[in-house]
Length: 390
Image 1 (cartoon, rainbow, N blue to C red):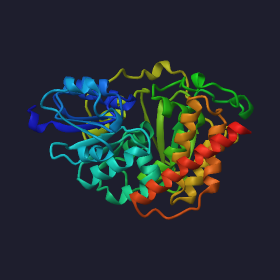
Image 2 (image 1 turned 60 degrees about the vertical axis):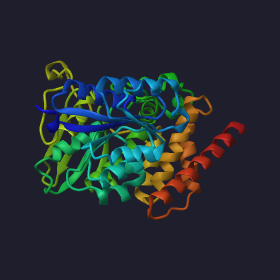
Image 3 (image 1 turned 90 degrees about the vertical axis):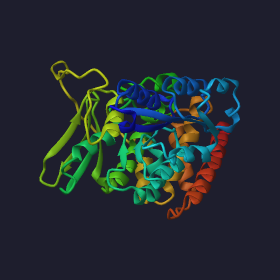
């Protein structure tokens, strides 16, 4: 296959867990995919490594403080280097980019998602915060099949709906492994260490999303994301504990039929499908042998112990700017927990107090969301300080 026919991909956050696995998919399908642009937040060593391996035409360092790292001198001579959040958005608008895989962590990915959609690019979205914070802005911009989810659960739901999108949905069953503390009480969770919280039983992920998975905030964010992606009320998006992590989500139609997507716990599968759609390519990973699983278990989440899931439900139902506050407060709280500045259960306490302090507004602009995000972060830091003094 000639270079002209290859899908030209920009990978934002190329050194993170999703970005690195996306590069592996591109490595395995070099005849179908061409990496033309990459970005990092501050991992300039990883940026140079990716740029040199794939011969990219453009590279971006989102954190201006690292824009002049000496190692950047080792970028290929033909590779254009830019820095800053506006440069990240500009990367999405390049004429030589067909598809943007947004694997940026946190709310910082929102402006890039908007830029990609406005530029008419395919958006393979792994940055759930784009929809959690700015779903009201994002979804009206997306043409049919322009926005393809990369999250394993949303990718599963998308696949279940291919060819049957006009049939009325009764519910989405959003599966969840339960994380490393499944079955533990709230009192037990009070003193769990970050080292233990980072040990996810099924998935290999970055530090922030691993903590979100331990608190079940990740599943709460995914409910909001699914609400925007698939147009279903939040109450009809049901979290289902599936410990074996082999069923990645299910859709239930009005007639009682349920369609599930199953497979191995490997993010390269949904990443690849977002790039190959509507085609399917050879698997990038080992297949699951269902003869060896033995059984599949199901259960309901404990929202009394894992309050973050309930808080995300509250923010999603209230809508407007509340999910923006939820996300910002959670990002600050998770950072504090990872640095030892607060406890595991404090993450929920910080988020709840930030939500209580915010007066909801309808979402009107990216600038408004940026202001709300900044307010929520400042408020959350004040709450952390007050917890430390208590």
